Image (cartoon, rainbow, N blue to C red; front, side, top):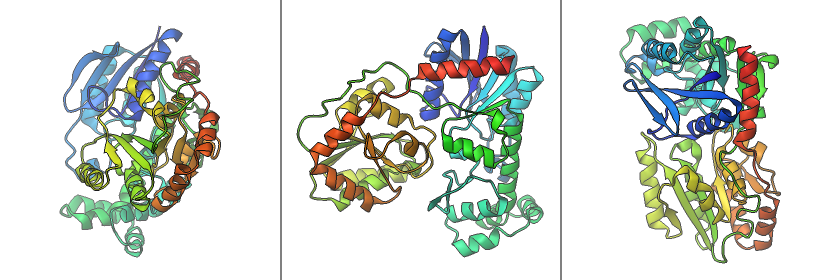
Length: 437
């Protein structure tokens, strides 16, 4: 039996994002193909347990204390502890689903030393983009080619540095930046001066990760384009789109919710890149519209400010409701009771699973015209695509739909069953066997 060791950002019982939900679904889908899955994920301390019928190993990471660590330099402590997991599991394939200090090229080195094949899936823009969104200066879709000077200026601008100053700081030669990083006291000035060096080091790490992987998986066409622009051979890349775990009915939610206000739901993380504030801003612009906004939010560490902003918005507008969290198996049913599922992301998604879940519920999507959302949603057929980070455009679209139930019904009729994780499992099983051979 082929054994695949999957390495995501984190894993249950810690809060799981879309990548971890995908990994759990893939593990289940591979089982009928005779492929055993084991999970290894970074954590504060090493431990081992079973979750959902799958063995899970957590390997300890080192504290992130220095400038290099903060910029994503490979964590040698994590790599050493991962080596102990490798020795225990003895996998045929190591599949990285993340690219961080803890989940680095060093893990591929360890896998190759023991003769395992290596696969990497580019799940989020953070794999190659230090800004993390692949939106150049936060405004336009970037071509994704990693360039030290351009990327340094963009990243500095994301941290509030005025554009002209950011472009000037991006001119600092990398050797100077590295010298400053070694000698200067910690602070914003040191970070700014060393940003060009940091972005070029990050680009080099990304390049080495791609070079060391036997196969690179792109969950969307835009990812394959980014990989090609960064020198990853097309022959090494495979497009394997995400699928939805579990069974669903093609007629789920076909009739739609009962008459009443236009019901719009959001399901996702509290991270600013998910664009929840676009929705609350939208509601403020259509204060008299008969619309309900239901927010099912997974709160992440470091997003207290965003959580407080949501509480204030809900307190000020009785049409905004913050819903209790749902188990994964309850999401599709909740979506079926809605008129629209909103996906207002302000970064390039590689799925996202929430669109597939909406389609499984038979509910059309109101989504940003970006990345994977734009690839999955057919504008005017099974949803509506809108500019990201533009509450006025979203308000105009929602206001029009609130008064046009025939159009809403037509969108609902246009929804088709989504791709399943069983299909993903068959495609990935073929890739694993080819790599192992």
